[in-house]
Amino acid sequence: MEQTFIRIKNNKGVYRDIDIEYASEKQVDEFLITLSKGQVAAMLKKALNVKESVNKHLECKYCDGVNPVHWRGDKKEPLVCGGCGAEWEDAKILVED
Image (cartoon, rainbow, N blue to C red; front, top):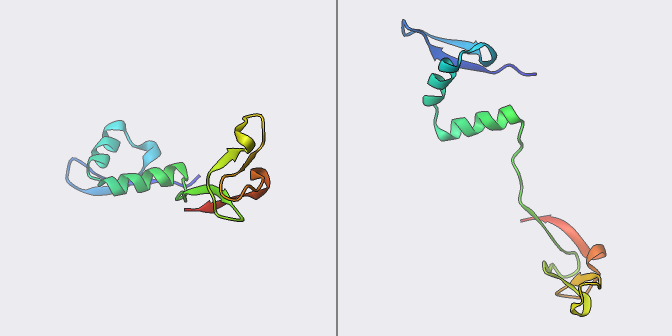
């Protein structure tokens, strides 16, 4: 696991970097107060190993339709593309927004 250091100022006004694992709750709180929202978000993403998410949706590979409907309006019938009528299970693809 990667170490994460925070920069804190001691009672003499001298800054030093310490491993966040060994920092007291007060030291962490004082450090967080100095951060901007963007810096906090970047730290959280790094800590949680979150990758930038890309919005994706399903659409029909034949007509780019995004509205599947039940064939003949009966919920027992399979889904088809609302644009071209292709069977949704065969025609759907995941695309980026």
